[in-house]
Amino acid sequence: MSDTRIYLDNAATTKTDPRVVAAMEPFFTETYGNPNSLHTEGRAAHSALENARERVRASLNAERPDEVLFTSGGTESDNAALIGLMTAGGRTSGHLIVSAFEHHAILEPAEWLAKHGFDVSLVKPDTDGVVSVAALEKLLRDDTVLVSIMHGNNELGTVQPIAELAAAAHGRGALFHSDAAQTLGKLDIDVQALGVDAMSFSGHKFYGPKGVGVLYLKKGLRFAPYLMGGGQEFRKRSGTQNVPGAQGFATALELMDADRVSETIRLTALRDRLEAAAVARLENVYVNGANVSRMPHITSLIVKGVEGEAMLLHLDAKGIAVSTGSACSSGSLTASHVLLAIDCPQEIAHGSLRLSMGRFTTEAEIDYFVDSLVPIVERLRSMSPVYDKMFGAQSA
Image 1 (cartoon, rainbow, N blue to C red):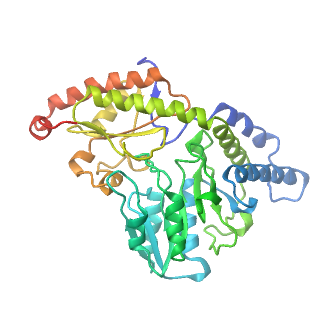
Image 2: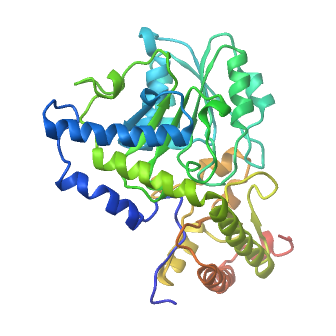
Image 3: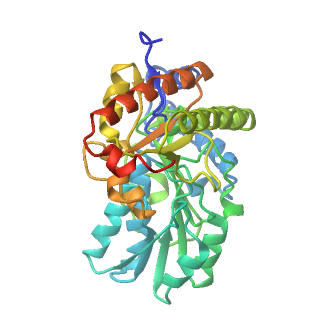
């Protein structure tokens, strides 16, 4: 199998499903007009855009189509939500709460807001990777404007109690946003049942195209547009809309919805098979968040006494693509901020691997991964001058 690449990094991005590509193709060369133009070509493109919007609305159970805003991706959706809601109506101060293990697309705009007059608090998850209502309630204040806590963590796979957290925020008069880039298509998302005011999504995380995302924004909210210009997307996000991308997003989401139950069962079985084999065959290995609700496709392994980057490179040489954490920050050799947020010691956090299965992952690939990982870890540990001293007497 070494001649065939095995892709276990589906949390970073996914292969665009061929059915999605086929659905997009006519909107590049046939129905290619500007959806804001009044001529026949423009009206046809506008109709296609609104068709995609309605399909996404139906999947999310949003109340109105104009609550679904097409963006360039998850990062833009996150940035727009935080900055657009915090600065709405000319607001120049106020309190924002985000979790300590958010994606940098949340943490960076939060830091920007902190530098521009806003007060920002970080709510810590527990050691299993879950933000509790009690932890949030301790930070809520009368001047809290917005709370942003991700639906599913992109590194641990842990699922947050969004409905309960949103209710707690609303109880103190605050709005609630959630980054759901990792969960859309994998979990059943009903924005009304969850009680969120805003939610961010990214097409390429569920076999859709890159370069397209969605921001769900509940009707009636004050919002400062993040991009200004022609006033598209109901004057909330200027710029000519990506009609092929919108069609691809909607098609990918419908395909995920159709297979969600069976695919959840299949991916959970693959995840459990991988974890059980890795823990059984290697000492001093454990799974982050194993005791709480998790998404079916993500495993966070800690392999004590080995650098995650070393494992990644050796696995890559064996034809296996994995991650040591969030791909957006994989160029850094610092310990994952996600693992540090759940109080994982820095020297142990360096030994993390994130494995993320997908639609095209097979049982044979999982077995090959474990069969490859075991000798790699054993060899790297045998070369370490400190492994036996630090971890040899410990159990997994």
